[in-house]
Length: 306
Ligand code: GLU
Image 1: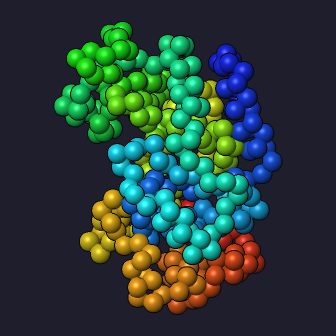
Image 2: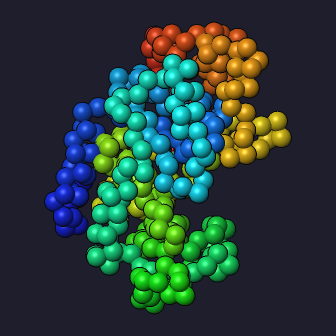
């Protein structure tokens, strides 16, 4: 960690605590958003991440990404906890709710703003849709408001979004990143990176569908002079039509399997078999699977290289 950023002591302490936790061993996490019931693909990602943490004799944290109140669904938090417990997942420490950490995120944002690393952006969706980078064929913010020094207050009854000036290594890849939306909601990219850093996460394991946001997360970490985040991506499960599963669209979750009379051991066995970890039709609890995999060397390697 490089501390030349002149962070105030209370924020620096959070980053130092994170580094300290990281130096004591492996710490992974699973971070669902409560936008619906966990689908079977989310559960398989949780399984891989839990196995990796336990095989490394490390900690595994459960974090609920519940900042986007418009997308949160009633009962989703209770539902995901119940589902994970039914499957036999255990996590270390209390469940972390991002909604309870807003003060911390806001303090980091205020600091970045004071340092001139953020600017007010008043681009609406229509303008943003037009931002397109021909180099990587992605929608990347054009930087329209970067040098306009727009006010941070209300204008036409609207507040601006807060955008992070990324350094030139990232500008072509990510563009300047929205870290606080104009409705005041702290963006997932910002909250998530602050969490990985301050909670001492050593390795983030998540679905391949999130691979494209990795540079964005690295750029946010870079703005805090942190470069010690490791991301690994695992294959995602697709539906019959080859489409990505989605919580919000109500993709198949545990209830369907339970209705069909499947036990948690059958489900764990089936999910592990889809990863080539056990033979098809195996039935075993999460703990039994862990014991089984401990006998084998480097068993998750093939999963990460898929
Ligand atoms: N909370 C987000 C989701 O459920 C992101 C997860 C992550 O960063 O692992 O898709």
